Length: 250
Image (cartoon, rainbow, N blue to C red):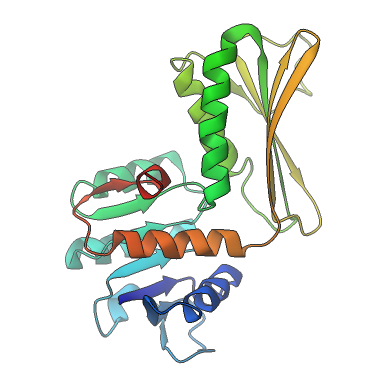
């Protein structure tokens, strides 16, 4: 049995994660963390991790980047594994996550969906085959309440493609102010916000007289919740280090 604390317990994703866990018999929620401490289930919710009455096996964080410091501080003092599923981290925060994994077990990915992580592998394979013969563009679509743009998943996809190309590409986020042709070493990344779109990502390989598009569409937030719970169970008892979905799906 894996004892889990949900950070961001009163958020939309926190409640979805609790629902997913309630249907399983290999894990349970023992507490939540949220600035809103009103409880809606059979576990207490605390304003900060330091107030937790007992050490959990794993903390799943689906809250806000501002919660990172307190979570890492608690994890470093207790040795608790972290599953970080929040998006919108700054480059400095990502470096802090990597640094902390030298002392504690941390599971970090920009997207908890198994399908998205398969898309990453397919994009890398396509890039290796097509090389520099095709222009590469990434389009991501999300609901109108999403704050950060581009999405962390779009960046993850771009990084995977760029790594395959020896990191020689640059990212172009906006072209409206540029009066020039597209450069060969660009990866275009474009964001669309509207309605209740859960999450859609396209990786477009545009060549001479042919286009290949790899796509993923999430129909509900549950796919991310399921992934984070699987990650939490995977992280129970793990040694220090930085883990990703690639480790989980081996």
